[in-house]
Amino acid sequence: MKKILVAVLFLLPVLAWAQAGSRAAEAAKWVKARDYLSCHLALEAIRSKLGTDTGIRRSFARVEPELEGASIDAPLSPAVLDQALRDFARVRLLVVEPVSRIDLRRFAAMPDGARRLVDTAFFIVGRDYTIPMASKVAMGAGVTNYLAAGSGAGAAGASGAGASTGVKKPVIALGGQPDGQVAAASATRGRFDYWVLLPLVLLVVLCLVLWRKYQEIKEELRARKVEMRSFNEGYFGKGGSGGSGGSGVDRKAIERAVADSNVIAELNQAIGRLQLRISQLEGKPMAAVAAVSGPVTSAGGAAGPTGGVGSASAGGGTGSAGAGGKNRLKVAEAGATRSADGADVFYMSGPVNNYFPNSAKSFTKDNTVYRFKVSPNKQDAEFELHTSGAPINEIVQLAESYIKSACDEENLPSYPVKNIITKKAGQAILEGDKWIIKSKALIRYE
Image (cartoon, rainbow, N blue to C red; front, side):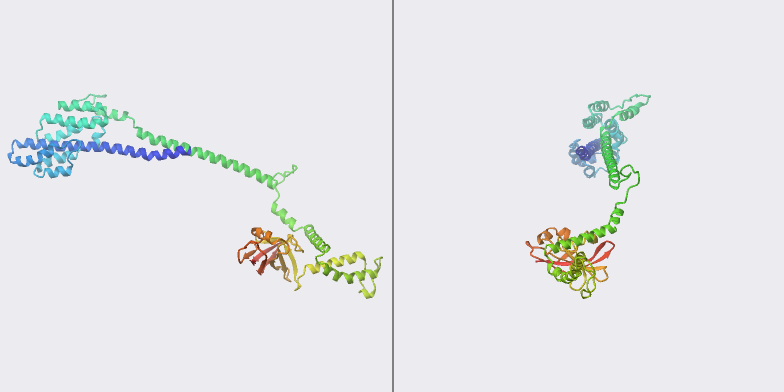
């Protein structure tokens, strides 16, 4: 359908141009016929004057070949004719100028316009000059045959008959109007112009195509609305599952409630302690654990297996195997979550857009990428990228997720990357359950 529309729109100016060209050619033929009559009627007017004025013989001998040689296909133009008749001012005034002012559009619209043009020209010249009947017949036949070549043989026959007799025969048409006036009007109204119909057909086709496209877009929009409505009902639980019939639950409210839940916070802490305990059992911080577990164990041993109160030399603390284990765990956690300058330290895997979720912090380096050092006010923190929690190549391959949201890169990585150095620590602030990135860290690949 689109190809048809493009073809139709392309052909429309071509057809209009062809129609305009046809009309222009027809108008040019009428102009040639009028100029032909001007030349030969001027010639006949000079010849009629020659009988009474012999002084113009020399001038007439000069212009006669030029005027007599003008044909209907190549008549003299008004400017050339005016120059040729420079010695015959009266002929120019009474013949050439009135004939040149004849309105050809009025005659071109009539079915017998050629005959009427010839009769009008003969009438203009006949007021002052006598034109032989033979010349009238020759000029009339030439003009009518020339113009009838584009408008039909019937018009040519009618024009020729009128010109041959030299008498304008009245034509009694419907309604009793003479001279073919009503007949001409009826013939003009009866003819159907297909050039006028063509733009109307093209306009109808264009409207049909646009209407069809509009219906297609309308149906697509209706389908999208139904799809979005069903998606919203399914995603937000409109109507409730299990036939509750209540309104949908806000998903953001659920996420906020989960993030603020004390149970979730306790679970995160328990997971952190378990991760720390696992790292201790794997032997990673064994030196620190051994150093702090000795005095606690001795204090517990002094108390005896019954779990009684310890001696005064043990500091007056309660001693038991269970109490000793808890003390060792707390001391190990304290050592693992504090840096050399006494600030709190924890680890994160990667940012989410422009923040780190507080619920995702870890107290061990395993499977993490960032190390956070919290200031004493517990609201501000510095963070830097470290490579001891995951392979460097994996971090570089996932730079879009793990690096670029929180770090500015000083250089581009050249594979293989051996190390990533934090040139400048980033700044983050705690807002609710998120560590919002205030300034990015600056890193360099080596």
